[in-house]
Length: 78
Image (cartoon, rainbow, N blue to C red):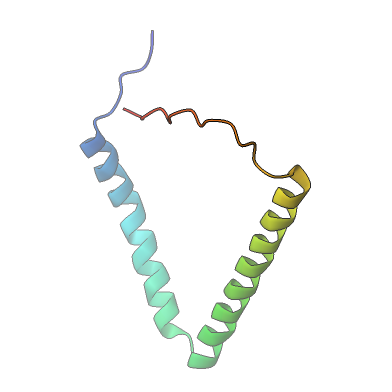
């Protein structure tokens, strides 16, 4: 028998209870960094994002172009 599903409100409330303290702590730590440290972290994040984008583009290139066939409609989650 399937487990009872939580309502979207209950799931959002659970995520908020767990996520808000983490977000507050991250914000507090970010505020304690010097401007030089912040810039260093931002530079690293930009570099990681660039590398990920390059890897994704490389992988798409190896897989070849998308087929030109008709698209199936996406199923909506309920």
